[in-house]
Structures are given as structure tokens and as C-alpha cells.
Image (cartoon, rainbow, N blue to C red):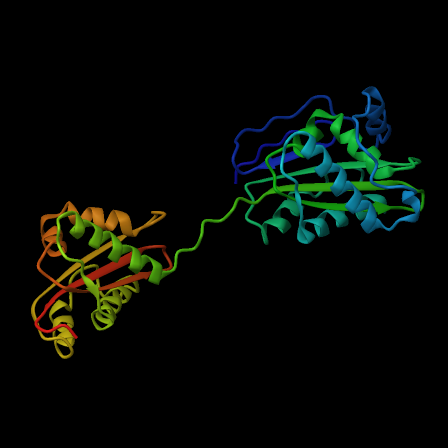
Length: 327
């Protein structure tokens, strides 16, 4: 995994998409807690409405919810979509804040990579980042923390980054110090899983579209022929037989028990790595003289079987039948 790390006043950014390693020379020493609070006073506070009153009387959960609302409020002001709160990410953020509050780790990003790995067990993120803060004596600790992040370029970059998930953890120790951790993750939408029956229907459609373009009648899908096509594709996908037309005559005999026919033909193919694997298969068949002859032949029935193995390889079998009597 390629990491890129930017450290700017307690900012640690990781991404699996970018290479290189860059560090800022202007890093406050760990333990210099005044560094963060002094930064907050250097710039005017942005115009944020307070989401919390008398926070000392509120629960930790309410503080975390307040951070979430304030961050999303700022993102809306920048015409960005809100971050969705994820309980699994929040658990990791909460543990880090509790460890800092208890003095088990200094105010820092200690253990960031471990948090990233822990979240990665549940979420296949592309980018992952973290903001931390602490304060004491403020009437509205979440508001002060978020305003500090906004006024720090590195932290603000995470707040307005192309993330969609977040986790927030807040902890308070006996000294009245509040520690905040916000984790950010980009979990891209997953491509819709295409089921094998959908692929078989798709291949059937592509073949009939080609026949229609030549004013040929469509091929009718027959479940008995499809059964034989499926068995052949499954055997190839499982490595029981090589990629071939092996067993073609046996399939013809099995179908003839149910459907008397004049002609019988077969196309096979396999591929890997295509978002819709059926389209390149049909295109390949059309570009091949023998396969195209079968697609355009004077058949009236067809059977289609597709199988996929653990390597992500798709195997395709299409059988063509010219029946004597349609059943």
C-alpha cells in the first residue's frame, strides 16, 4: 500500500492513491499542548452557529454529535455533501481520545496506522485521514475544536476532503481536558454485483440484437438446452476440463432426447476484468467467422450457460439448435 503523509500542526493524512512522502518542518513538539490553543487565537473564528450549550452537563455522545453537526454544517457552507457517521470508525476514534485523555499516549497521532488497519477490516476505503484536538475551559468545547480545525489548513483540508464517512470520539479526564479525534474515510460506491442469470439474459439479448440487425428471427431460450450449456461452463470454470468444446457430441445427444433437431452448434468463450463481460464475448464471436456463422445460422432455439470461478474468470457456452418441432 502506498502512503502519503502530511503533518501540519497535528495532521496525519494517509491515502492509498497517492505516492511519495512529505513532512512539514513546522511541527510542534509532542506535549506542547499550548501550540494548538495558540493557533486558534491567531485567526478570527468563522461564522458557525453553536450546536451545544452548557456542554459540561451533556454526555460524551452529545459532544460527539455536536462535532458531527458542526463539521457537516461547515461542509454545507462549502457546497459539499455531509459526512455519514459510522459506528465502527467512531469506535476507533473514541479509543484514541480516551487513551490521550488518560495519558496512555501523548496528544498526537500515535497508533494512526493501527486505526487505519482496524477500520480497513470493515471498510474498503481509498483514503483515510485524522484530525485531533484538545481544549480546556471553553463553554462550548466542540465548537472551539471545530473552529480550530477550520483555522488550520491541514485540518481544514480533511474537513472539506472528498470523504463520505466519519467517526468521532471525545473523552474528558479528571483535569477537565477534552480530547477530540475525528477520522475520515472515503468508501467509494461499489459496482452493482451482476448475477449470473442477468449475464445470461444479457448475452441472449446481444445475440438477438445482432440477428435482428440482419432481419433474422430471434432465438428462443430453452431451459433444457441451457442446462447442458451451464454444465459445460461450470466444468471449464472449475478446471475439470480445459477451455474447449470437449463433450460437444455428448451435449448434442443429451439435448436430442428432449428436442429432435436438424442442426446443432456451439460457441464457447472466456474472459476476465470486464464490467459487463457478455458484450466483449458477443463482439468477439461476431468477429470470428466460425462463431459468427453459428450466431447468424438458421437456428431457432438456444441455451446459454455462464460460470465464474474464484479467479474472477467467466466462462461462456452458447448452444444453437434447429429443432424439427418446437416444444
